[in-house]
Amino acid sequence: MMQIKELMKQPYVIDKDISLADAAKLMSSKGIGSLLYVIKGKAKGIITENDLLKNFGKDRKVSEVMSKDIISISYKDNVSDALSLMKKNEIKRLPVVDKDKKLVGIISMTDIAANSADLDGEFFFD
Image 1 (cartoon, rainbow, N blue to C red):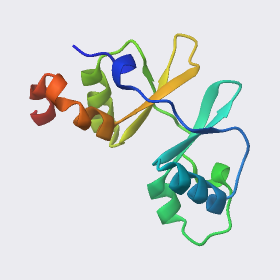
Image 2: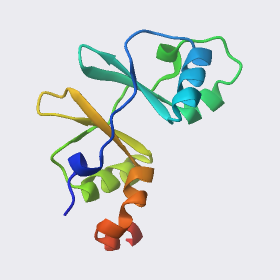
Image 3: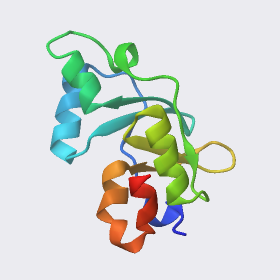
Image 4: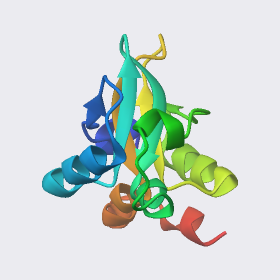
């Protein structure tokens, strides 16, 4: 079974509270779907394209609209665990953490789907 650490990517993080407009520009220029708000190595919030769309045109800061109840997964866990967690919580991205809960990566449903040929396919269709 493939582990998270084999598929995770480097997350794009911010360490200060920026405007939604700046967040949108950053995500667009980097071709990414989320930003993680990180303080002292630990993820405190995540903002996604969907959050930006819901708040389009509003003069707000990332901290006002980001999801603060972060659901994360260990880099040692299996990809099937990530899929189960995503399905259960209806999310598309999971911050990946080490044993001290420090952010080490991010894994998305897209990352998993792109590597589905290398995975055991049965858990996609349960």
